Image 1: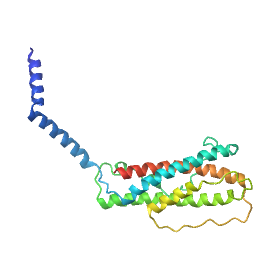
Image 2 (image 1 turned 135 degrees about the vertical axis):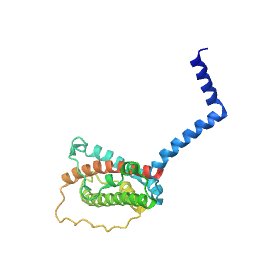
Image 3 (image 1 turned 90 degrees about the vertical axis):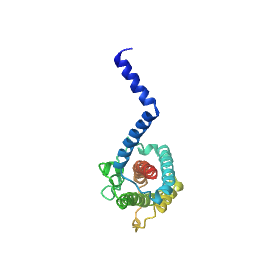
Image 4 (image 1 turned 180 degrees about the vertical axis):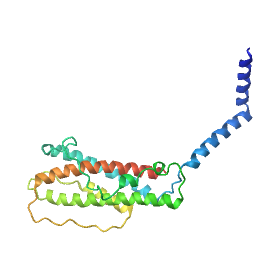
Length: 219
């Protein structure tokens, strides 16, 4: 056997011995400890566990409503490729920024527990405001759709209930300004096109909300 082969054998024997295994385990533990020490510690918010189920129900409900709208309103350009996308929350809330994962907002530095709680609360508050805006818009549109003699399309009560359930679970108090009733006859064509636009935008936001709830629940 060559000298190099003998040395490799000695090193292997050392690693396989009990002291060698303890040494390897110690190095692995220290490596994980150093990584964990640099990650922000998230204090679980009691609202996130209850909100996760509600966010999943919301995503399912809005997806079903959108699929139904695309089938019924196929003559109204109700596909995402044909629509001009609109975000009614633009310049009003900052959910995407407020709900960035902590790892992307702290540059690896530790946060105090109260700071982490504040960031989580800001995220949940922004989600609540998004839901409130969409809730007002959908209710106003539904009132117009119910004026259609053909009753071609109206919103699924399950989706409206899912929005309300998640808002109640988030448990924020915020004044809601009801839309002013229009005295004019509704333009049902424009109303149905707007419904398609809002459903596409709201489904994207529902995906974001569900992913964020999953992240917060696992933190």
